[in-house]
Length: 120
Image 1 (cartoon, rainbow, N blue to C red):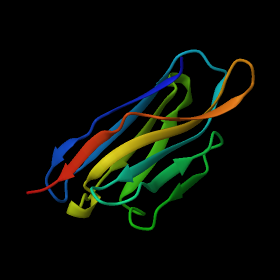
Image 2: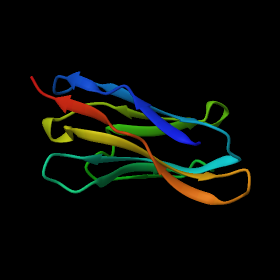
Image 3: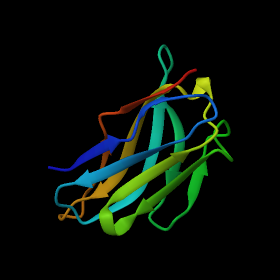
Image 4: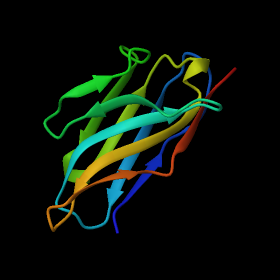
């Protein structure tokens, strides 16, 4: 059973920083693209950042220059470093990953979400 477990969310003041982690557990062959999405109250889920297994990244315009996505393939863990946080970054942040099973089938997985609140 493959699972994605996020951690690192919380309450932070405007201008502060947080680092989210996403650990993939279970037995699988490899992780392709890992990404972070967020959903604020009343809004649809939106892409924040993605990173391929080769290291190519993609960011939403609203977070470029402030957020950095990274991954440690040896640990099957992805990260989202969030700096210069703004109140509009407040949302539940979800990890997403394309994972290849031992049978070489690829599936898309979501984590349970971790809340981030930016407020003074």
